[in-house]
Image (cartoon, rainbow, N blue to C red):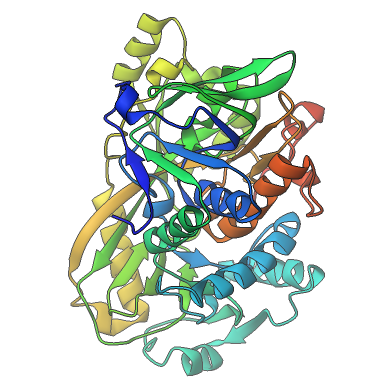
Length: 447
């Protein structure tokens, strides 16, 4: 799979022949973009790093199923400095290897008059954050950027600095970097609990045995609350499912990432067009007993976005939770996650709406569909914290469907917190304590 050394263990088995290193400086749990970048950064600074993932390879869950947009535009003010640095790190990484990085900018297309106030607010927010290249365009200037957009549109919000890439390839790039720096990579290994003594992390236990370490980074996506609970830490995350499709190859039509109410898209260098449900996309969530954790934070957001949230009762999971007498037991975390249910009509409809703006896509045929689990937080901001639990524990989770961009800088932050116990990067707005400190803000859009 890679040119670096890694261990692939069969799930649930322990074998002396397949043993992990018994000690490390840093254990990273999860090999999505955050875990991969964290392992690469920590190992690159000389740390002895063990990267563990329950799946059979990297980027099998959220990161490998992301839309691939790398944007600064349209973010919360607190995220902008991290996103700007992350884009620089992505550009440097592209000098080392090919993961289809395209710096084509980002367009929020406007297709109705009602959308104009939202885009104006986003432009004002961008300017306050120092992103003065972000601007509103009329229909004529928008078509100068995207000549193929001959269908009805009223204009756009334009950010020329943004980019996109193939997310699985981007994650694998950081995994390779971690391996070259000396990190030990182990797949098919489920971490079963965090180990602590007298308020300090001492490592992890896993299906392949314990690894003792002074620092652990939990970058486990929707499974982060389960692992955090083993040391008494509450992490309010709601898993939701987002669906996408990819067309058969088309001629070059646009280089930008396109976002709009009802559709989103980017075109890969190979010509395939990746289509998502766009701004305020409808997402799915299976209700179970784990939703009782942090319900007071979630309920206001769920009510605000009830039209964007498709709820079903996850009877199988509820029965398993009752059998385990716990809604967040690590026994409920699968050794290999099943495929999320794909909402094909939703993304088929998004392709139809995209084709009204870019008519040459009317004959585009979907070549594949997929869905990914997204770790949403009540306020739509990530959780980045190295001081919420036992000393030596760093939790980075809750990227809320727009965090793939931040992966490289979050890896640097994880390395800072793990090796130095602090970081100079601004992360106060993302501390876990915000949920218990008072009222939290609700985001303007669901995704």
